[in-house]
Length: 171
Image (cartoon, rainbow, N blue to C red; front, side):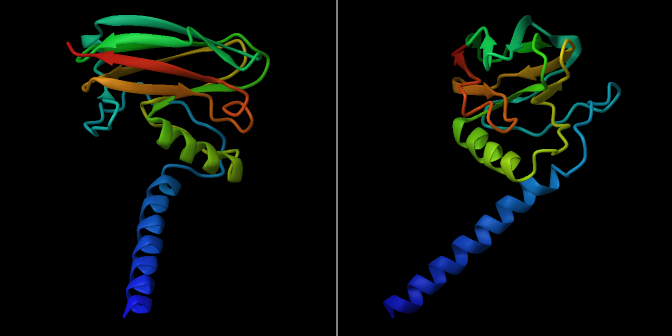
């Protein structure tokens, strides 16, 4: 009986892993990174760290610099629950960098996927892939208090310390 339960649990875990992985794989391909469409409708998808913000309802603008020293400036951001933030993400380096918002668990999982598929396409509203010397904008609404993160998930960058923290305080 115990052997049968262990097999059932193992099968369920494999099925769950495949289902979760399929969602991540669907969002990516081996194509080059693409830019978000300016006229695309605002997504209503809610994440643990918030949802896509309406550019007409921005309450705060935060500039984030990325460098080849594998660091973000600032390394820590504090916002209030409910804030809709326009991030102006500037790549001050000579290599490609990105800013991806998420929970630490999600960022680590996505980083592992990036190692296997380094040319993945990113077009989610919580991701900005920025060429050297360029800027991108990302609008995000933080709907829940908590501690979240942003990272560059290009292979080797996250591991080198290219990660920042977002503290969302109760509104």
